[in-house]
Length: 315
Ligand SMILES: NC(=O)c1ccc[n+]([C@@H]2O[C@H](COP(=O)([O-])OP(=O)(O)OC[C@H]3O[C@@H](n4cnc5c(N)ncnc54)[C@H](OP(=O)(O)O)[C@@H]3O)[C@@H](O)[C@H]2O)c1
Image 1: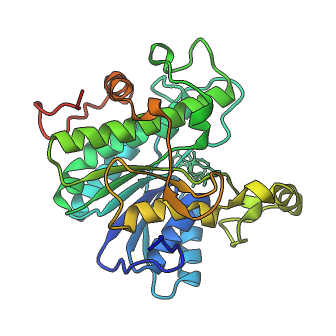
Image 2: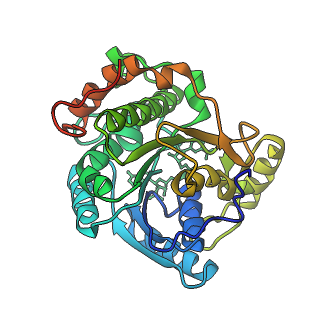
C-alpha cells in the first residue's frame, strides 16, 4: 500500500520534538503529527512565535497535545538546556532536525564561536543536540532522528578542507554545503547506530521545493503578501506548499516500514507524495562520513560517540 499522507497511523503515546517548528515545514510537521495524536514539542528560538504556532495547532487540531521548549540552534547554552530537557522527558520517539537558515546572507557571517553561520544553524547545533540527547533516544524503543536534507545537495560538493567556506563563500554554496553535510551526517549516524547495535535510527528526508506562497495562510505562522502568493503561484507546476513539504518528515516519523538509512522525498522530485527517493552517492559515502564526523565534533565542540568508545562506522 502506498503511504497516504492524509490517512496517518495513530500516534497516541509518542513524543516528537521538532526544531524550528513555529513556521514552514516544521510547523506543518508538528500540526500533522499532532493530528495523528502524537505529543508534539516545538523547539523554537522565539517564544512569541512558538506561542502563535501552538495557538494555531490548537485551533486546527482538536485536542492537540502540543507544547514548546526554547531552542536556538546557534547557542550552545540553549542547545545544552534543550538536550537536558529532552533527557528529563524520559521518552523521545522522534527528533526532527528541521530548523534551518534557508536564505543565507550574501556575506559570510559567523556565530559567536567563529563557525560559519549557515553551517552552525543547519548542522552544528543539531549535531550537538543529538549527541547530547542520544541517551533518551536510545532508551525509547524505535526512536528516530530525522534530518532535513535538500535537492540543493545535488548541486554542490563538500570540501572537508574548507568546510567553513573561509576561502570560497557564496550564499548558495553555504546552503548547499550545509545540506550535503546534514545528509552525510544523517547517513553516518545511521551507520554508527547500526555498528553499535543501537535501537535508534537515523533517517534523511527532503521536502522538495516548498514555498510559503503555495501554503495555506495561518495567522501568526504563514502570512505571505499578495505579491508573494502571485509570484509563487507562477511556479505552481514544480512547487508545493510547506504543508505538503511536511509529508516526508511526517512519514519518516510514523511509517513502520521506514528504516534507519532510508531517504524520503516527494514522488515528483520537487513535489508530491513522500516516497523512498534517490540521493547522491556522496551523501551516502562512508568515507565522506568518516571524514566529516570529527570535523563536526570539533566545530560543535561536542564529542559524539555512539555506543561507547569501541563503536565505529562500517568501511
Ligand atoms: N522549503 C523548501 O523548499 C526546502 C527545501 C529543501 C530543504 N528545506 C529544509 O527544510 C527546513 C525547513 O525549511 P522551511 O522552508 O520550512 O524554512 P522556514 O519557513 O524559513 O522555517 C525555518 C524555521 O527554522 C527556524 N530557525 C532558523 N534559525 C534558527 C535558530 N538559530 N534556532 C532555532 N530555530 C531556527 C525558524 O525560526 P524563526 O521563525 O525564529 O526564524 C523557522 O521556524 C530547513 O532545514 C530547510 O533547509 C526546505
